[in-house]
Each structure stands twice: as structure tokens, then as C-alpha cells.
Image (cartoon, rainbow, N blue to C red):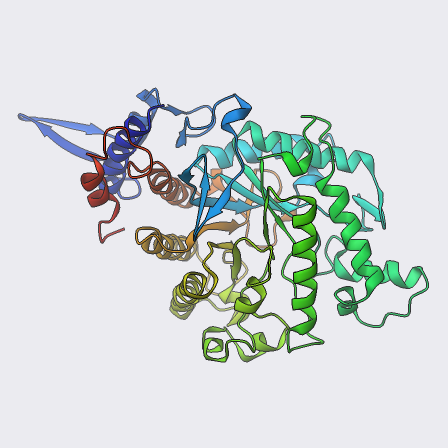
Length: 469
């Protein structure tokens, strides 16, 4: 579609969304006749939006693989096909395991369809399951081919719904094996390891991890025949989910591991972006910033947000937000205040010191928290979205967020308390859709590619940058 035509359409949609304000109708007058319409009405009748794959799915990526390009960084923004790519996304970690069982594989497709229907464009999920039930890696460099085929299915299915994937390569925690499983494998081979943190420093364990990275990146998808390292469906590689090395609070051990592994991934795959998977705690390299940490313990876990992300090969920053885990389980307005200041600090540092985008790659609130209600969850999500939009409209580093976590119907037994089932959460679903619409506008702004000389730019910016956003 012509870029300016798309931009005009999205401007009109935004105008309607702005006044609709999460569910109310847009009213206009023609003479004495009142006209009532909704965003859904407009999108349904617009030839430039598809409703089969998502109400807010702009027809920007065609069936031709030439239109499905790698996402890259340009300064402190993501870009694809020369246009900005701000992210509204989600986490669902268990997709590979569900795809490995034919009785649950359909839930993967169902999830992607539902996520697409509210405009979500990036999913973060595990590309590991080490030594556990239905393991991908049964022992070092020994894989279950059927489980690998399940991961192939996840990647191929994501592309069908125009959803890109952040694939995490190992866990800091014991779930799905994690660094503890690597230590068990090391001891089984004759090593005498006493700490799970030796995962980061022991040469044999480092070689185990590298072998897994190589196996995943060089995997040829059995559904698409595309090698993972050549597939634009993959948004980025994540070195580890929430790495911590509490045995070395100085951060030197983890820094050495990050530097080595980021460089190794880049040697194997120079096309894709790499991120670490950090929670975002400030460490010894920036003592003035530790005031933003949620507690004093956060400075002792061996991570260092600024220093870690300065390692060569790291393309963008990752931050998690869990006030209910880090501050107190009882929800309060203090959690919202922390969320806002935590985000603003990391956006500022990503601009000032790192020169890269930052994704808030996990955030949410548990229904198990004392004082929880769905209205509070919506307020938290809105706080995250609004803080990001305040950065986006200034051209800042706030590049997106990923909800923890999205579930389809019938998967409640996997719920850790944070699951969002869109069909059961209409207000949250509407909030996500609204943010997706705003993100789509930024991703299609006239100021990027406009043969008309951007004559619509000023009016568009007036709509986008309204203070009430």
C-alpha cells in the first residue's frame, strides 16, 4: 500500500480511537443527523486492514517473502524495511512443549490468532528445555528431534500470523532445566562443581551452552526449510532468561560470560539482533543509578544494567518489571510509581549511555497478590503503555513492551497467576488493541517514506502527540 495512504488511514483511525477512549463511541454531526460509528466499523469496511488475522493488522507484510525482512536497530529505534518498528508484544514461554503434543498443538495456533487479533507483533518464548520432561536437549548436544520439530512448528506458525519471535536460549532458574541442569551434566561428566553459578565460568559448561546455541541457530526448519539464522520471523536471540550470578556481586563473572556469548552468537549469525535477557538491576558501574533499584538486594545479584549492555554484540536492552515480587506482594499505588520511575530511568540510560532501544520484555501483576483486581491490572498496563508513548513521541529509546503473559482458553493449569486470557478479559483486550493502534500509527508515519512531501505530517503529529495520550 502507498505509505502516505496508509498514514492517512491510520491517522483517521487514531482520531476515532482517541475520542472513543477505550470503548465509548465516536459521535459526529451532519446537519441535524447524529452519526455514530466505531473503530471496529471503520476497520471492518477498510480494504487496508485485515480482520481475519487481526483487527489492527495493517497490510504491510505481503505473502512474498521479500516483504518479510529482518528487524534491525537504527540508533535507538528498531527498523524494518526502512520504517520504524515499535513493539507491542507478549510472552508465552511454553509454546514448544505444547507443540510437541498433537493434542495441545492447536493451542499454539489459537494463541497466535488471538494475539494477532489485538495487534500484537512480537512473542517471547523458550528455545530450550534441558534434561526435563519432554526435553529439547536431553543431554549436552543430544536432542529430541520431535521436540525440535515442535519448535519448528512454533516458528512457522508465528510467521503465518505475522508475529515475530524472541527466542531465549537458556534459563537462569531451574524451570525447564536452566543453569542448574548444565551443572548436573558437568558433574555427571566428572567435574566437581558446587555452585550453579559455575555455569558462567566453567569452560566445559560454556562449551555446552555454545553447542546448544549452534544447534538452534543452524537448525533448518522442517516446515519452512529456512535455517533459523536466516529467518526474519525471529526478532532476536536472548542469551538467557533473567541471568544472575550472586556468587560474584562485582559483576565481573557475568560480564565475561555476556561478552563471550554475545560475540559467539554474532559470529554464527550476524543478521539477527542479540539481547541479554536482564531484569535491569543497576550495579557497581553506576552507583548513582542504584537508587532506582527496587531493593538493596538487587545490587548484589551480579548484574549491572549499563555495563552489561555495553558488551559488543548486544543490540538492544531488556528490562523486566515486577513490583509485586521486588517491593511487596500487596499491590498499591507505590507499585505504579515505581513502574514509571523504573521505566523512565532505563529509557534515559538507554539513550544517554547505550544509544540503543530498550524493550520492557516482562511486566505484569499476579491475581494471587493481596488487593488484586482487574482494574488495577489495566491501570498497570496503561502506565507501561503511556510511559512508552511519552518516549516514542520524542524519538526516545522506549521501543516496546511484552506482557507476561498471554494464554489461550483451556490452559489455566499452566497459569502462574499472571496469565491474561483475552476472551475473559474484555477491558484488558481493548486496552491492548488501543495501544496496538497507536503503535501502528507510529510505525507508518508519513515522515519516513512519503512521496507527497509529508503534507499530512503536522496534522498527524497533532493527533499522536496529544497530551492525553
